[in-house]
Length: 163
Image (cartoon, rainbow, N blue to C red; front, side, top):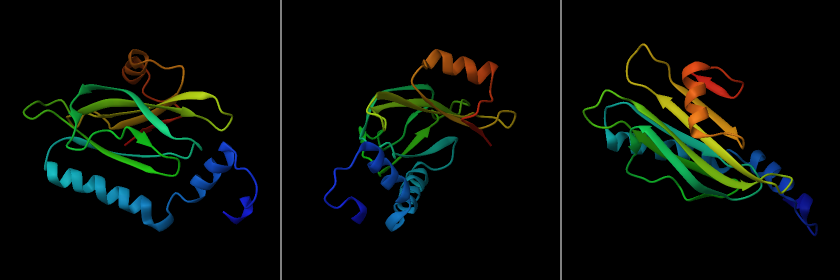
């Protein structure tokens, strides 16, 4: 980060550098291998492999999570995700239940302007071929109930991924 030598770095600078180094030293591949290893230990069954990258310029701290169906696997949600770091976790369905994996986790941190923000990451990997996998993210202005309502009634949004 030679361009910052002798100069103070802003949150925006830290965020930009984190984004530019998303794959540095294969950290993205390492995170993927880690979560695939968790899946391998878990075995067969409906589950969700989750990868989250923090390029906010600030540390994100876990403030809440909710499981509609299933639960976090053998490794817990990370309590913190440092700027420029990957978080990897595995959400699994309950054994013997045809329910799939549906959950959400909320992290809190400051954005580039220094404003406190909540960042929600949610997923739905339902059981049954008639349902589609979904994931979404939101920043502020959300509630778990609102999110669940959106998934059921309005499944498409600009920040939703379906497979």
